[in-house]
Length: 493
Image 1 (cartoon, rainbow, N blue to C red):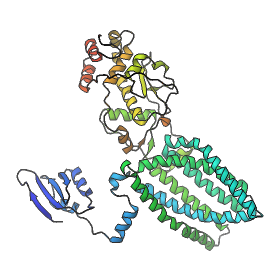
Image 2: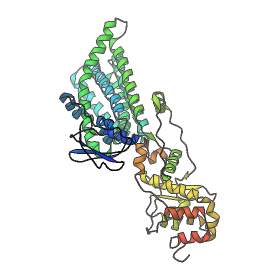
Image 3: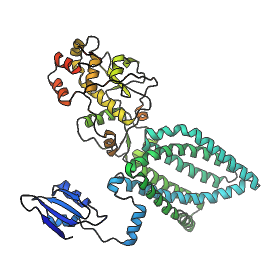
Image 4: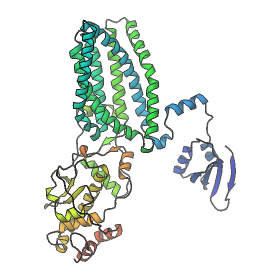
């Protein structure tokens, strides 16, 4: 690519101006910027302007902006199947997750083709008339509807821990499909009990899987691009749907060609079912989407509050993901005590302090930080409540002083201080999600049945510098000054 012009030659900086072509990829400049080889870049309508420095290799800048000649057919296919601006529209694991999912869809299509044959044979063997077969099919449909409605109560599992719920549902659905087909192949005259049992199991798996799928879909696709990504995913699914039948025919004919003493249908079911199980578990394993327990919530909020990088969610691995289907991961409780009964925290002053929030926080008589959330609280409130709990914990050494300033209400004074000093700016939930963490009240097992409300008051905030100054040089006078006019001390402390 040729440089259109070079301007601002004086000093140590220069601007290199390149012609911009619509759809041009600028990711190469991001790499140079991260390496410190350039200072910045900006795109206008028809040009890309790059601020360079003494470390800049101009040839490398030019090469980073080179766009390979597009092959028309491949470009059209890309537009049809691949989400645009993937670095901005989808999660980093998108391609891996979709790859395993689409491979599973092909295998599922192959099993579906075999299942149709098996069901037709079993129907002919089990029913003496078309009417009785139709009646059984109708009853099966009613049973499926009723089972699905009942199984909907299990949908909350997909909200609490989507990755584990997805793996569980995938395993159940695969086992159910293979069991149905094998059962009808071995016992074709037992269509009713085998198929009806399969309908019930399938409803349970479907309820868990659908709720998990919604959360995973929202994780995989960024908020601004979910419609576009969904459309591309649908195109991918439609395309791979053409390969299921050929695969089924190839596998069954391959099994027959071996000449081994085995039922070719059962062998084909075993081969395709095992491969489908592998793909489903690998799809779940590829997700960077781990549930947050109480201990991890404290760790994440502590890092976010201190402006540090939060830890990335670990990968479970294939064996670990499969194990978590049967054995729930160990939970870490952390230091904060989570209450399911908010009674110890229902003082009028506390309600006034936290009137705008969906949580209550305080110290027990033993000095333990306690936290109570409303039922079905959102992720932002979970993060904010934990942030104040940790701030309050840092104030525990000053409890005796607070009791002198507010006799009998020292703990409430520190609660007010921690709330007014609470700095909760930015999208903490989004940062957690980008690091692969899924935060949900059900996973944390928090939320109180009891309700509380109070008239909200505007409390003057305490700046970060004021709070740090108090932490470094605590005194009764400074505490009184900080809490003046608040619910605990009132207007005339």
